[in-house]
Length: 421
Image 1 (cartoon, one colour):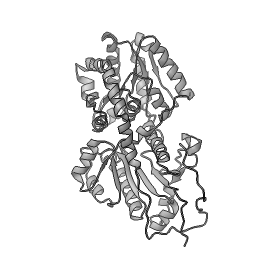
Image 2 (tube, one colour):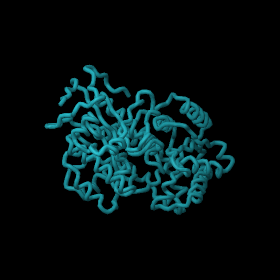
Image 3 (cartoon, helix red, strand yellow):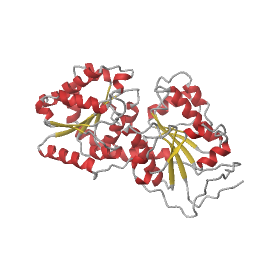
Image 4 (cartoon, helix red, strand yellow):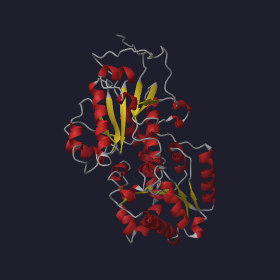
């Protein structure tokens, strides 16, 4: 048997991402988590992914070779043994980034599988946290019972006060109110993908125009809202065209935030761009990519206002002090906007589609941006502190478990540099 002696101050985290690459929102969570861990003094972090041949190396050179395949463990009939589990991971903490997939509504089977993984880690002696997740008002059958069965040592970090309250109504255990880890994402402003868009936005502003970011989300068509895609795009075009009538000279930046599936944000926004009246289309631009979440956040800092149906595009804007009118789905936006005390900036898809007052409400919110902006900026530091609470992790303590040294394994060097952002 071999007992590893960790160099003083060295800590290593394992991150279980919310989804495969493709969603800029999930990417923002992962990048925010990595940056937060670096700031918290973690020297190393690796991504544990259950999907074979998935790599997060595209995030940049410093993240190359960081993905630890989980699927190969499942092919080993002995992988679940605690000693083998710990010897293969060699970490101080497992962070399961919950986001939407732990809310008990989207995909219950995924929620159960992740809870099983967290339970295994905790029972093996590896400290585990469910970080930054929402919880639905109507979770699927069996989800609450699965949460109740979690070991008491697992940290539960809900990403908004509404989710925390829902969980506490079901569970007789502490639930920490935090904020989404994407609030820790540092904006990028100097890459070619950002520079061209920023140049266009500033040229539009020089003409005395108001810069409005716009996002459309196909989940509003597939989920409980059940909107027709064509009708939704037409409604966007109608409302945005009405801004001119209301006396607002708007320039529109159409920003996709998820490129997965054949019908995605980009396809909807391209259809919207085609429907705009010619005078407005001359002051509208689609961000076509490729682009990363931190680049989108850099772009959002140039906006005056945004209309978004994506939670993490809303977070990118709010994190930069930009007010957002958000189309809510899955009951998760109210908690986010409570962090900033501006729940009035959330609208239901039904009101967006059918309310006769919607055009006037949109114009009024844009005019009120100067009232919202100081409030959002003032609460930003507090919200980032809440986001860091996800990573306020105790040092590892694994009594009675000694990892086994196997051929091909190695110990950490005596001197380990801090994890670079």
